[in-house]
Picture 1 (cartoon, rainbow, N blue to C red):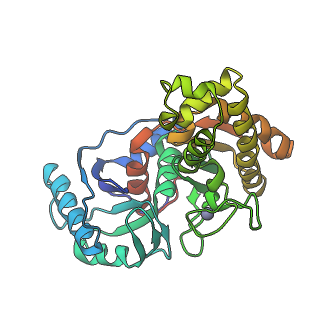
Picture 2: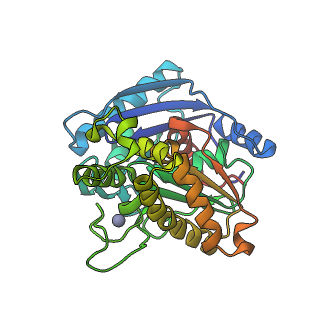
Picture 3: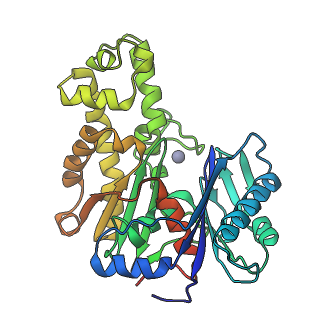
Length: 345
Ligand SMILES: [Zn+2]
């Protein structure tokens, strides 16, 4: 363990719909225990509050909500106002620097917003603030006390509505020059005018093919255009109710349309993941996210394709596992990251 650690540390998960704030006790010690055991060690917060982000997304309004929630959880455990308690925030955003300036957050409607500096001013000097991309926080949580515990070099990839990633090298989260390291969702797997458009403004990003929101839109489009599939029966006969889980179950049954779609998408994901493995040589890969959680057939196809696009010298040593911490990974990870440094080795 490098750097000082604190007895109490706060994690904040600022998503598109919900704000969660949790305080943990002796989290660094728990991470050391998990690391020594090489096994997940689920952490219960000492106090937690959860509330809607709300309709008003102005930065000063959101910051005020976070400040109130931090005071509430620290009050619940009796921490004094002068005790130093780091506050780590995981946010669904592309960041612009290490101070927490948000370059772009479609969920919050923020572009070029000085979120971190304002939160830091409002919380005061006893609450040092760290702001992290949400999947970087998730990845570090999995590394610290979850499915990555005991690893040294970790790649975490979350396939949810979009695709995010986190890179840990030699126990340290790779933040990059502008806090954007790990954005594997925007790795290109196609280019040119026919490549799929992505929410980031680019084209051909792997997220634009395999991200859950894009897969769902494509499913709806193809079924509305007359594609026939067992997935519609599995969804109760309503094409508009089909979600990726139905398509996955249909593919497992050999449904031709579902299989064709998965057979197209699986190698695209495998190319992005395999190239990242080739570049980084991790000893563990943690896969998670809502989309991958309900599409085991797609996941298995991607892992088969992975073996075709990754040199054995890099693939053989990798332990590929599923995420262990669920919804709490980002809370724990942002708290660990804020706790006096990002190294757990
Ligand atoms: Zn993109």
